[in-house]
Image (cartoon, rainbow, N blue to C red; front, top):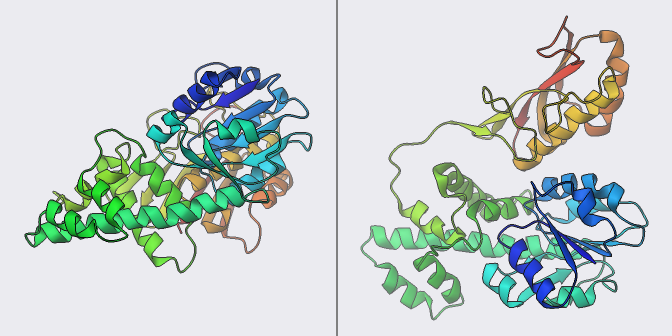
Length: 386
């Protein structure tokens, strides 16, 4: 039996391919009940989710349902570092394969994706072949690394072409004329896509921004510039559109500069009450609101237990940072409010698990009470984004 976790644009046609190939498939998406029930008894568990934090969250919830000897096949685009975290998360009795894909919704439906597999695929080779050609790349993480590397070339190239068309139009050169000339170059295929942006979303622009962010490294100037351009397009409302819509964003003269303060409320973090945002981005700085120990239902986590509450808070902070391409090492300032300073040792033990190396600027204060009964601590942050 196969459990397929994720029913987004790619997940739906991929799960359908498995059913049409004769496999018994249980599908899961948010709102369909506990993920643990979906994976119970499954030989293969396939994840096709939005990003690394989403995969980690879902598999954490599924841990008790995974049977010994099962294989988890991670097919999202999350990067090799996240794959290593998944290996640490899963029990040794559960195998892990990373197998992200190249191709969009059409190839997913047709079974013509290119599957980039890392790790031992012996338990899932035939299943992966249902999706398309399988490249066995070697050790765990190799598939994730290759996917990020490929997107680090393809996505910036499309941003560059969007700017090229904008330059041409500003100087009286039609898209058709420029696309016709570019057709005879190695950029021809990409140029034709940018010249005629897709109405249907095949590869969401905000996911392209995430994929480029995964491959960001110091000195990668073209990738960094493409990421900035894409994130500006997301803020302008292009996030759910196809990546090819970047041409329209680049060409459109800005009516105004847009808000300097951009709210950040990742879906992987319990929702706010509507009166504040989890964080606000201003340029390359992120200001994170006070985080407290609540679960997705708004219930208190770890009543009376400082370590449990601190763990919940730092997990939520990690999701907020990851959403913006940052990590705990990017924290510039951390401020902690404790209702009992005598419990700072228990808090400090948890904090040192997450904040390692050179510590950030820090303030810890004792307060008489916090905004909800039972809360033992609250943490806010200032983060320097990569």
